[in-house]
Structures are given as C-alpha cells and as structure tokens.
Length: 302
Length: 317
Image 1 (cartoon, rainbow over the protein chains, first blue to last red):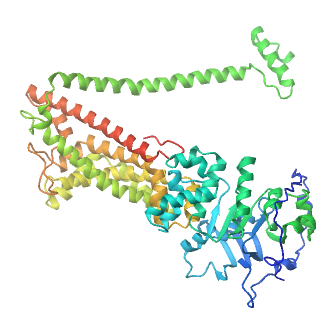
Image 2 (image 1 turned 90 degrees about the horizontal axis):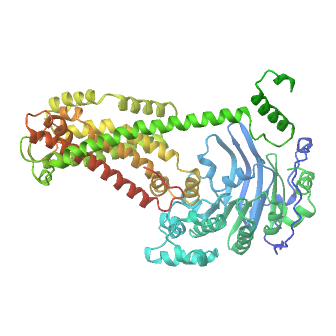
Image 3 (image 1 turned 90 degrees about the vertical axis):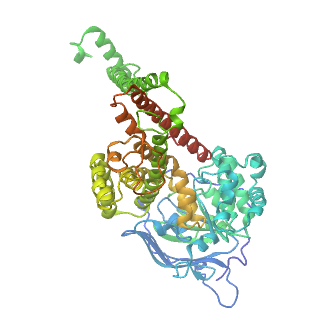
C-alpha cells in the first residue's frame, strides 16, 4: 500500500526530455473513458500504526462551478517532502484541484465542493480552521509572477509583516537570507528599494518564491510556475524546487510533460474531470497503467 | 477586369493593382480605395481631436491670462495678511476660510467617500449595490443651489446652527461624496486580481490586504476623485452663500454659529461693489483661487508619483 515516501527513490533530474509533440490530433473526442478504478497506488490512507507519510489527503473530493462538475471523486494521499506533479490537458481539473488545497476557490462565485481535504490529518474545511493559518502553511506560486507594487525588500517581507513573524530589526537579515535562498541576492542586493517590475520575469518569479518561503510554509502549491518564463529561468527555478524537498512538500501543476519528468517524484494525471492515474513519475511515463495516460504522455491526446 | 470598365482611368488603375494583388495569397495590396478611405478618416479624426484641444485650451489660457493681467498690476502682498470685507483690507479671512473648508471637505467627504467606494467595490453586489450606485449618481446630479437651499432650511434655520462651518461642510460634502466614492470604487476594481490572489495566498487578512495592497494600488484613482472634491469645495459659491455666510473678520474653528468667509464670495460680490479697491480685490481673489488649485494639483501629483514609485504603471492624476 503505502509505497511512497518509503521505498520510492527517484528524483535525480534525469534530463529526460522526451517531450512528445502535443500537436492536436483531433483524437481527443474519440477517447472513451470507462470509469477506471484508481490504481492501487492511490489507495493510500492514513495508517494509524505509523506516522503518516502523507502531507495532503483528499477524500471523495468533488469540485465544480455552478452546476458543472470539474473534478469528480478524488481520493489521494500526497506524500510529504516530495514533488508531486499534476498533469493533464487544459480543463481537466488539475488547477481547480490545486487551488482547493489552500482554499483559493472559496472566493470564486459558484464554486461547489463535496468531500474533504486533510492537511497533516486535519480537515482544512473544518469550522475552526483559520484561513490565515492554513495559507501560512500552504504557500502558493502563480503562473504569472505577481510581485506587489512595493519595493523588492518589502515584497520579501510582505507576509512576514502581515503575520508579525519577526521584529523590525530582523527584517534586513530575513530579506537577505530569503533572497540568497532563491539565488536572487547577488542580482538585487544593490537595489532592494527598487520596484520589482524592473526585474526580469524569471527574477520576479524568484522574488515571489522568496516571499512565499518567508512565511515558513510546509506545503508549496505551484500553478504552472514556469510557463511564462524563458528557458534559463525555468532551469533556475527547477533546480531550486529540487532543493526545497524534502524540507517542503511541493505540488506542481504543469503543462510541460518534460518538466514533470525532470522534477517530480510522482505524477497525478487528470483527464476530463477525473484523476486517472497517480504513480511514481518514471512509472507513469514509462509504463502507464491506464490507456488514457499512455495516450497523453505519448502526445496522442492533449 | 471588365467589371471595372466604367471607372475613370486612374481609379481603374488602382483598382486593377488591388485586384491583382488580391490574387497573390498572403500579400496585402499596398494601396487600395479602402486604405485611401482610412487615411481620410484618420486625418478627419486627428483634425476633430485637434479642434477639441483648441476649444479647451484657448479659453483656459485666455481665462488665466485675463485673471493674471487684471490682478498682477495692482497686487500688494498685504492682501494675504489683512482681513477685510472689500472696501478696505485684504483677503486673509477669505483665504483662511477657503482653506478651512477644503481641509474639512477632504476629511469629511474624503473619509465618507473612500469608505463608500470600498463598500461599493467590495461588498455591495447585485440589486442592493446598483441601488446604492444609482442613489449616489442622483446625489451627484442634484443642482448645488438646491443642496444649498436644503442645507439652509435644515441646518442653518431648523437646527439653528446659523451660517456656519458645519453647515457649509455638510452641504459641500454631500455634493462631493459621490465623486470620491465613484473614483474609489473604479480604482479598486482596476487593481489587478493577481495582487489580491498573491495577498490571499500569503494568508493576509482581508482588511490588511485591502489597506496595504489594494488601496495603495488604487491611490491614483482615489486622488483624482479627491481633487474633484477639492476643486468643487474651492469653486462653489451658491451653496456656501446659503450655509457658510460671510464675515469680514477671520474665520474661527467653531463648527456652528460662526460664519465662514470664502474666496468665491469675494470674487462674486467685491466685483459689484462701487469701489475700485474692491474690484481689484475680486481679481486678486480669483488669482489666489487659480494659484491654490494649481498648487493642489501639483502636490497631489507629487504624492501619487511618490507612492506609486514601485508600481509597474504610472498612475496619472
């Protein structure tokens, strides 16, 4: 059962970039999806006898907007201290899934949810749950870098100040430590008071990462964090993400299959509102258990 | 090409070129009748825009020149330091009164207006929100003389406040709150969703992110609304005649029972007084008003530029 977090050791960025061509083949409509039971690997539930290897557990999670169901009945355990990639075509529900994990969808009009999400064994939808605490524990990085309209240093400190994490005297040290952590210090140390919008897109995304790390999250949700960036920045960010595990649990939505292979330990494949397969990344790409997965990772649907 | 046989020669040539070019896929004709039409429409548009600029610009220059030319030759600095009621003295009482009214409007209309704008942008939705917005627009549309008269009957007479700072401030604020509220609402709606999402994802509380992120980003728009409010507070005469009254002595900070002198009163009444001195004073008052408005706009711009120094887009005022 609980194979992750224990036995599975992948991870060396293999540099595999057998990214299949994603040219539309028009085959998508022809794919019939019989309700496939999730593979054994998905049935990871909390095992009382030993410490849970799962950081995030979903139970019968069904999400929708208005009357439309976007994602149906997802039961997964996302292991701690690993990078989990979420792949699937546009509209498959993976972003909605990600944004449910820190309740970013709460604000969206018409959002509906059944089922539950547990973070470290505790429901995030419980009545006693404080959104502020939840979001301190689950940081998020968006598709487009979104620094705030304040100085670079103030951006790093935005969360620190909002949560009164540190005294003012400690702020400069925090700024430096976090910017060093994301390898941005050397580029910006001379202009901490400048606008972040003069940085390159990749640097802005690193700044947002520093900002997210500064509040000390356990889980980091990343919604296509590199899709708007140039190849060199992508490389820098991917390398950084590899360094953040196992201290943090990373959940990454990506459209880039090669990226999923390079950085993730296991991969969830979403298709047409269902979680089709959840397996160690190598296995999901090399020997997919489900026919849709095989077609997607070889570029025949998508 | 036979269908073009009736066209005059030159036109036919153009037409033929156009058609020939049309047959080459992917290559647009360099010159067609449509592009000629576009050029004509373009130059007509530019001409109309230039004319509009002239229509606005010329009277403005003429007006400012008229005020300056009539005020400057008789200018004495004692105008700023002596109170008076036209026949003698200066404009110190009117200047201080106007500044008092402006500060009061910024506090009262600014506070109420910004809070209303936040409410309209963040919390008022559906029919209730539309009702509030409609009500605000109606308030903005009421003629100032009507508001002034209502203020006179209710505040000055019924409440027994007499001509007073409070009565003048309340009427001026009622006039200007809709502008501040509208500009605040619009400015908040234009704050990019990504800022808000970023704040949410960091776990900022709603009020905190509103104050630290959204309002800060919306400041240029809010300032525009405040400037309109200030301009109205400085420029209005009719409602103040009914509510603020006038006095030849310095204004006091008392909210009731003390009339407040103001510059537009001087412009309006001193000009009609049978003394050259009073007429010159009325031009001085107009000049001071223009100078105050310009100074305020410049100051507001500087504030905006300073607070938006980290923004990716510069906000204009």
